[in-house]
Image (cartoon, rainbow, N blue to C red; front, side, top):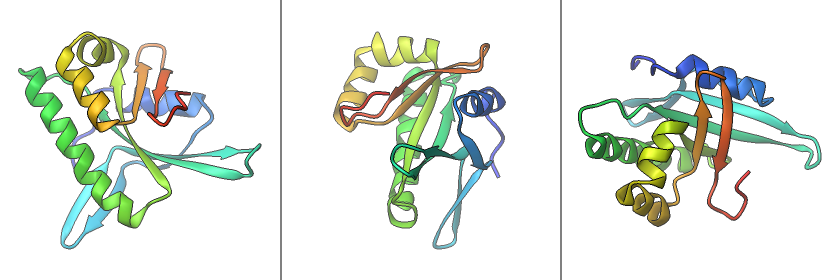
Length: 145
């Protein structure tokens, strides 16, 4: 299994504060002989809809030497996990979670990050690790939460 991300526990606590139940830590995916591990999986009871919302979350810190390389790695990892999840867990939405400063620097102010989000509509969770709160959900189907 891969090492935990620096903000793993912070995001986990933020999800719990937001009434999510952590179901898997990590969330194990298997395709053929390959094992993959998404950082977290969680569920939330939707009382009004009498159902459950299910998510999987991959946390990214963008702490490498190159933001472009980090972005490429994050996008590649996202689509690899999404391919497996769409077949085995079609009811679960896959998110990338990023620190709010990273969101601002890479996805709001940097044209390349904006382009990637606009073209590929990758769902994001933006969180504040110090306060352990979710700042923003970006889902791309006209339902930013």
